[in-house]
Length: 212
Image 1 (cartoon, rainbow, N blue to C red):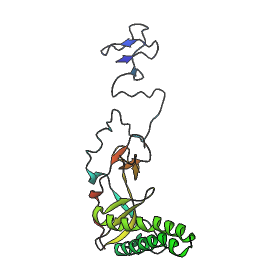
Image 2 (image 1 turned 120 degrees about the horizontal axis):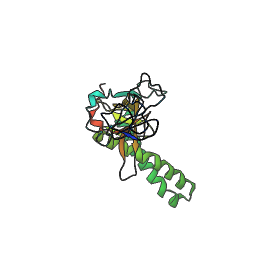
Image 3 (image 1 turned 30 degrees about the vertical axis):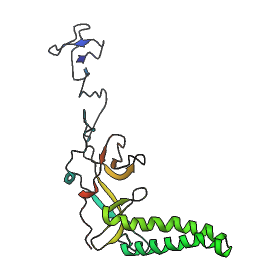
Image 4 (image 1 turned 60 degrees about the vertical axis):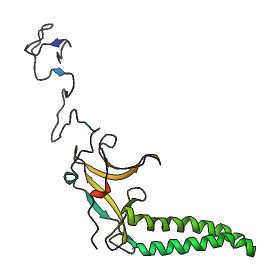
């Protein structure tokens, strides 16, 4: 549908002028309807305008077109982002958990009840380390905090990483985040330019193995 910019009346598609006011139909006519775009008295340069893009089926995208990048977070003891060996996680978690459990019951024998609180705090730290050491070998990839993830290499070193890629719609940077409630959490690649619409569910299995 095309409308006159002078009086607002509809102009037939084959007419070159408005039948109501007589104004000549030009390139500034207003177009309405699906896949239409109007930019009256505006100048647009070096931009790509997407009209009618569907983001609901965004996961039928070839991962090779996204330019997925894995970067290693620099740590004080490792520029390659290597946290520790998986065996170190298991040892620290196991011994820490056992010592903490013993510390919980020790005050009932010694009367030093301040040890009870210390043991509980130690258990809060050591038990997740043990569980992570057990889990990471099976899943290979685990979101940690914010934009950071834990990954395990072929020699069972555990790394701290970040995942980014190119947005297939606007070519801006997309960053991997964990979104949703506890029951429906998802790995999502979210565009920095249009975070509300440009989203892709991320499958960690597309990542190559970490060669060591």
